[in-house]
Image 1 (cartoon, rainbow, N blue to C red):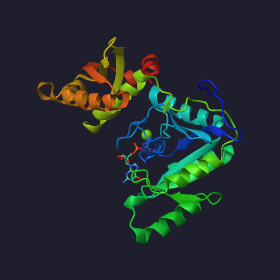
Image 2: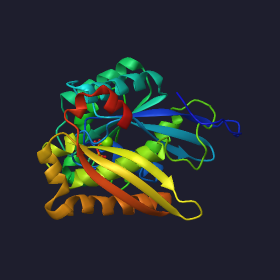
Image 3: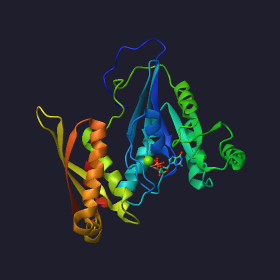
Image 4: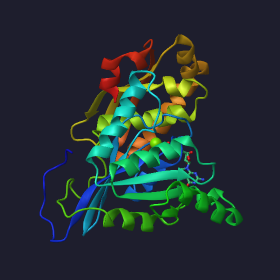
Amino acid sequence: MSGGEREARPSGFRSGFAAVLGRPNVGKSTMVNRLVGEKVSIVSDRAQTTRRRIAGVVSAAEYQLVLLDLPGFQRPFDALTARMQRTVNDALEEVDAALVVLNAAEPFGGGDRFILAAVAASSTPTVIVANKVDLVPAMQLPKVLARARELAPAADVLPVSALTGQNLPAVLKALVAALPEGPRYFPAEESTDQPLELLVGELIREQALRRTREEVPHAIAVEVQSLEERRGRPLLEIEALLVVETESQKGILIGKGGALVKQIGSAARREIEAIVGAHVFLSLRVKVRKHWRRDDAFVERIL
Ligand code: GDP
Ligand code: MG
């Protein structure tokens, strides 16, 4: 697994990588952001929001935990989902621990069983959480937890809420306990391994996902074409493309008189400014690229 330079560390320092696994929409990215304390992975209620592996780094005096936010398990049907699936299988081989996220607010299903079986077969130390307990009436919680524990008799299941932060310190503690002694892989102030171009692309995509429905969110990709710091001024100039698959999707994203793309651009600009701490000038255009999801070379470039 790649990392930054190795720094001095106290003896007994623990470090390692934990894969965050779960069906789409259970709250994996929300949990990673909350544990890291910064938005490193975008969140939406649309399926396939997280398309590639994103590392979120939690650094403390005694440990460094690198959380790998992975795309949800899917059946491969095109270049994009095939790539996402590979990412998940590869990750389990390399990690020190796994965090399996279940959604306590919905019935558990085949997807959850599949993931728990994959983890059990890998003999990776595993922490299992039942997330979104803020949505579960207190009366029903014992029953929900009992069902979760039936699915995973060998491990404990922690009731948590990534949204409210409930029980997240216990999750962190359990994951850190599973880490071996090791070096700091990332500088302590770094919260993610993503190059700025990719993070910026993701923040733009998040705003586009929030404002589109049905098949449109799946068809959106963002390509950051240039990202330049103006010398001597705290100003970042960004040129980016919202890429979709059809003319009609392009029309939807542009909106009446350009209203939607403008909204997406200014909301994304505010998010980017908050993260980079500089003014941002964002030029955002919409472009059609037919069947981009089947185009391996394009997928490779944007993910
Ligand atoms: P992922 O697909 O597993 O990465 O899920 P996301 O982190 O993108 O979250 C999916 C949706 O669930 C978003 O709308 C989140 O705001 C919401 N969500 C995540 N965690 C919680 C939680 O603990 N409680 C509630 N009420 N909603 C949550
Ligand atoms: Mg996600």
